[in-house]
Image (tube, rainbow, N blue to C red; front, side, top):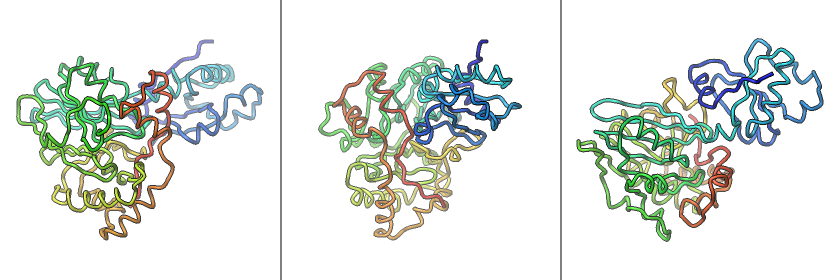
Length: 378
């Protein structure tokens, strides 16, 4: 009996269309609790693979026979075995092709805006809650915070007929491996990052602080590079015509960037206060904030976009109501002491160019959720 497979993209299309999805995750309980596929319409059940070897029919009691089950494991092997077992018992099953490994490498593009000679695309790496951006004008493009799988951006450029001219990292990432340097070498584009992030490294980069504006294409789409320290000292946000701000890990839909990953939580929290209440105070309420991450599937809008108007964030983001500098600093520094991103020291070393790893090791280091936000929901 051959088990039907479903790809990561097909699974996400179902989720994105609002279809009910039942996932049977057969990884062990620890892995499942640490990191799993979530969605607004997803019902997820965890029954570890080894339980199915015991041929205990009571395992299946709570599994719905009227719904399709998507069975998943780490890499796709165990899930195929379990899916076949369930098919023999009359269940409608798919096995997720490549398992959580494939899910971790899946990127999904959504167009945020396509008007006035400007196209802005948000690329969602769902497994990590990582967001990158492609800004296209007159056949030229700027990529913000590209992730590890650089071929995705190269292929998009080929399909949509644009040339990647500029690549920026908003900061030195701690929870995922940047594709910035690699993508620049593949495409001949200029790679920018703040000197505050890259000093002391051997990275080939153009200092962002020397470029207050980056022009994309021949027309006047100017991107302002605004220093927004707090998550890290050199964190930079990118503003397009007061309409869109790609905020990196500085401002999220439901929180702010955690300031503790450099071991200076108090100092960086004070920088974050200055950024939020002074540097960005004149940013209009109708500017769409497009963050570098999200921590909750609920932050994906019905249109598939993660983002919110700055006015809404000002009103709803509990931590931004705390205008007293000392109280804000205490709150942010205290809340940031939660679990750090897995393998963050090795990932930072890779992003600084100090540690070289092969593709398999890079993928292994990255697997798991992102933990770069301090979340306070209002």
